[in-house]
Each structure stands twice: as C-alpha cells, then as structure tokens.
Length: 413
Ligand code: AMP
Image (cartoon, rainbow, N blue to C red; front, top):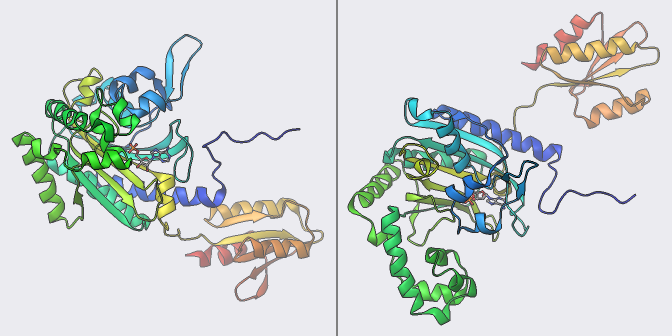
C-alpha cells in the first residue's frame, strides 16, 4: 500500500524535540506567570469574519494565507492564522472589561497559514503570545517587550535584535498613506509589480518588499515616525525611556510596518541573526482600536506573538534536571507481577521507572537498561530481589520492595 504522509508545510514533533518544546513551555509559564499573565486557550478555528474584520481584508494573511472552509451549516470558518483577534473576541464575549484592568493573558498553540513552506516557515506552526488589554499605559508596551526579551534570553536564543517604531493613530496613518502613495506614484516605474498593484489599497506594505527598485524608491520617502501626533510621539518617547532605563537594547526603525492592520502606536519585531531568510522570532505592538472593531467597548491593548519553531532554531534551551531512572528486569523465574509493582512503586516515589516489556533475555535487558541511561537496575529473580547501581557497578540483594524504594528513590534527592 502507498504510504500516507503528513501534509506539506506540517511536521511531526518527535520525542526529543517535543521535550525541548515542553521545556520552553515551562519557561514561558514561569516567566509570564511571574509578571501576572494568566493562561488562555481559544479554539483552533473561528468565524472567518473575525479575521477579515480584525486583521484586515487587504492583508496578505486574510487575502491569501487562510485555510477557510464552510461547515455543514454553511458557515464560513477559518483555521486561526494569528492569536490577537481571537483573544480580543474572547475578552468581549466573556465581558472581561468588567474585570480589574488591564487583563493580562498568554497563550501557546497551533496556528495555520497557507504560505510557501521553507526553513522556518510552515503551514502549521506554534505561537506563544501575550496580550495586555484595558490600558494604554506606555509601561505595558515596555513591559511586553522586556518579557519577550527575557524569555528569549532564558531560552538561550542567540543573535537577538529588536526593532521598534510607532504607527500613531489610524487618521495619521491614512494621511501618511496618501503622502507615501504620492511619493511612490512619482517613482512608479521603479516599483515591483506587487507593490504597484497594492499602491491604492495599502502603500505602507512597500516597506516589507525586498525588491531593489522598490527599496530605492523608498530611500527618500517621508517617514511615518516624523508625522506622529504630539500625544503619540510622547507615548513613544515614554516607551523608549522605560526601555532605556531597563537597559534594553533596541533600534528605532521607521520602516517597520507590521503585516496586520490592527496596530496603533508602538510596533516591534525581534529577529535573530542565527536564522536565514525567515529571521523574525516574534513581533507585536499596540492595537487600541481592535476590541471596539470586534464589537466591544473602546479598549486599548498591547501584545506580541513569537514563533516556537523559530525560537528553537535559534536557541539552546537549557536541559531540565533529570529524575533518577531505574529499569526493572526479570531474571529466570522472576515474577512479572512483582516487577510490574516495583516499577509502579518507584514511579510513585518520583523515579523514572520502566520494566522489561519486549521479551529480551537477561543480557538483552541489561543492555537495554544501559541504553535507557538507567541509574539503577532492579533485578527480580525467583524469590530474590537485587539492586544494581549502574554508576558504581555495585550490586546488592534487598529483601522487599520498600528496600528497593529506599535505595533508589532515597538517593534521588
Ligand atoms: P506575525 O504576527 O506574522 O509577525 O508572526 C509572529 C511570529 O510567528 C513570527 O515572528 C514568526 O516567528 C512566527 N511565524 C509566523 N508565520 C510563521 C510560519 N508560517 N511558520 C513559522 N513561524 C511563523
């Protein structure tokens, strides 16, 4: 029979990698929990309308990258391509504006985008994200940046660089878009087809292009950062002052535009020089209009999302402390029931314990124990029990399961 393979752009996570991911997950939970962020989970699919309205109709994500389908009832649903709109939907749906503000949340889970797969870019990937909803205080912008920075540092990510900018208010951005459009129109013959096609609807996306002509046309273009309204400029200055006070390195980059429409004021992106073309580890910013856009009360918010697979490509996540390990083998005439119960008792006492389950000879079992990295081997014989310390090689008889526990679990602390 022909073999069935995982879909393009997806991959299985085998135990060794899955363990690294779990270590990273624990690190996230600890780092974010300390800062007052609580975990939230939202569904893997949502009404398509949520992303059309939240992320923006003319964004790449909504235009080209969503896995959209109709359910049996004729409703249009989409696998979630990002997490901020779903979390804001949940905030509105559960009346979280009545809780003490800001509401601080974090999530971790699978996301889906129909993109051309390459190193660091998949059709199913895992994002970790945080959202702080209900306050426009600049300390939240700075805090969220510092948290991603701390996480990446604890995870051991190498070559991390932070780019920071402000997009101001939608009105400012609209006026600036007109100005930029004019500028680019005057240089239309230099632009890529893609940028030219989008000039009417979304000229800012020209900044995401790596087309040489487009880049040249942008060189002397006006910058949105120079057009910010006074209170937005002041908000941005406060965010920077807090980052400076915390010794957080960053680069102000007026060409940074994020590919989602909901951003206002602060935007940022974390990159790693360890990665190739797909160098973004994570990014985010403030979205003061999004909750209202989704039918909630006017509510500011700020957050980011980071790609777990990319973090793992750029980081050596520190190993977790290993529990003591034991392997229970059965010599000729040894009782299976006793071996089974010794293994179970050892686990109840915090030891990683397995027993022989593949019909190996005694020699084969001992070899397997070695392969598993067992610290101890418990040998269940006919009417006798022995414990072998694999490090010292010392082997001694014991009289009961309780003695095995004493010897093996007792030395685990
Ligand atoms: P974005 O909101 O698009 O900036 O995504 C946030 C982060 O998610 C990015 O910085 C990447 O680390 C990760 N990410 C986004 N799209 C993909 C993808 N197709 N494959 C793997 N990681 C991704």
